[in-house]
Length: 311
Image 1 (cartoon, helix red, strand yellow):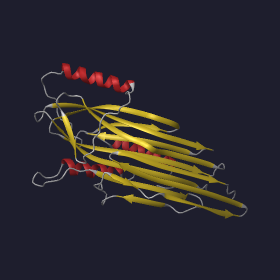
Image 2 (cartoon, helix red, strand yellow):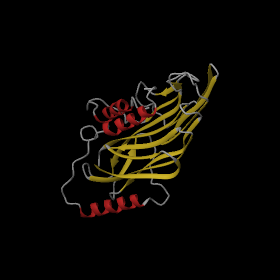
Image 3 (cartoon, rainbow, N blue to C red):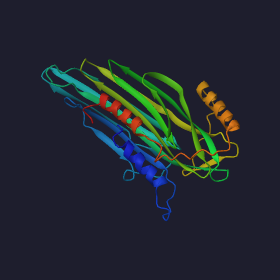
Image 4 (cartoon, rainbow, N blue to C red):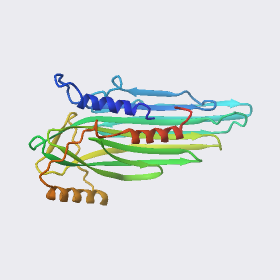
């Protein structure tokens, strides 16, 4: 599900931060999307299908996109055994908020097949933007609060597996929430970002959902429903500071009362600003000081455990 995520992210950061000074590069924003359904490992109930929305591996500069709905079903018979299965998947982005849906099922066992059949539905919806910090003298320290919020429903039966993960990276700092079981409304995480006025920070969000079933023990079903919604918010904590975005999308704070974790983060940030000394902290460089590899490797490991025959 995340085989090319680190490549896309590295390319985006290079474009934003490492373009030669004599080249005028417009700030980057846009969408990269992949939706997939498939059946395999043992005999397949339907073929693997995937739709990529990308500009040669780079974001397509749009603020809204809805993928086609991938949906298929089928069956096979071996001897006296008949196995049937289906899967559906789609994803979308609307002004920086992401949505996705994947569901799959299987029924019937093949007593003589050497391997169980596995069916999957996947979506990986990536949103890119450039956040330009302003409002104060160049180099002045600025503190931001990044909050992610996820509403999703994950369900399964008979041993099926499903999960939804919502991740946001801003200036090499990451917030992440995951729903692996049940209905989660307003699942949130918040992190502090220390930067400076005049900086341009890369914002990358990723909504990843997976539904996985097999017929090793009989009938299974799984659904990863994030159709409503993965959102991210940026709150400026430093008085007088502000930001603009390459996409024109605003990331205003959610209207709901924040989780206790977020409240304590805001209070800690205000205290830090009030008692901060005159020494200016160094600007965070996402390329040289940030490392996305551990988080991306973790996602890849989870994906390969769920769908080893697909990767």
